[in-house]
Image (tube, rainbow, N blue to C red):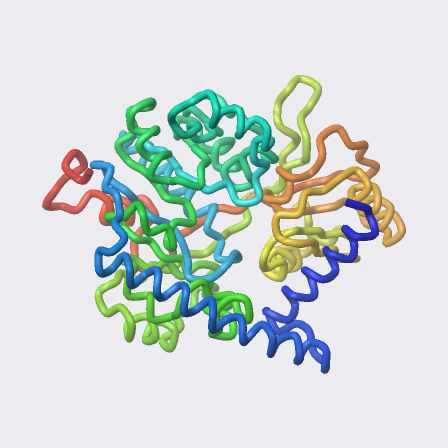
Length: 404
């Protein structure tokens, strides 16, 4: 693909995202929004028909005989799901569970077509899932594994991470090969072939359901009324203040679900890359940002929250660059960012941890390049995240060993 065509496609995709999120105005945006609205009716019909087929047992889920925890959302992107999955998996691991995270590997690089054909010709069974981590070693890079699976594998020693569109096959593989007794379906709320005993639904408190419309006119994957399928609702990105209207809406569709409120808290800055001795880059406290001139860039669904973190920490954003969600940065992109930072008089460049795994290795850094590390903190609904895991996965009447 030529660089000109790539730029045009990227610009069109960014325009589409701006229309969906209501960030673009004018006649052209209004006409395009009307077209997307018509398509959303078709999407809604397909989504509800699929759920109806599973609910009436015309299509069947496949139990695997172990504890399955589903973590997902009703919307596309932007709920802060990966840090929740990470913290949940860590808490389960620390309680003696043998955990595997099953991901579809969104935007990951599939094996070449010839390799898939050759495997189909020479094997009777389907190819095994891609092993991002066997619990001891990270075996794939972010391009092959996908951003989130690679991040989770790097941050969670002792947890198996697998990538496959067929999560039933991946779950059976985790049980047989690694002896896992707990499966976490990452972004699995719409994956109906493998039924979860616990369905943890994440709702971004800053923008719960977008404009209330389904894809592609809005950000909803399925109607809001499907909140009823959740066993627990996590309100993410909370500012600490309760929102009675949002809680009432959730209760309207799901009176029984536990509502747990959490915030994504910045922890520290980490210098990109590794030192000469192989250790991770230098860590800086958050206070280091205060008063510094920063260029911020990100390729995530909701860049506003990341940029707000930096401002709240005292950084002066002299420039910001936003890319498509899951955008993979090349050398030209980095060179342009460093050049822009120099023109704007920036002292450093800061991005997100998710973006950091998509930055090309070995690029010269005329200015310090950091990523911001976030972690989840529960603020309402449980005394601590660990208490929530204990209450959710190990109910008092079952105990830890019977929960699976």
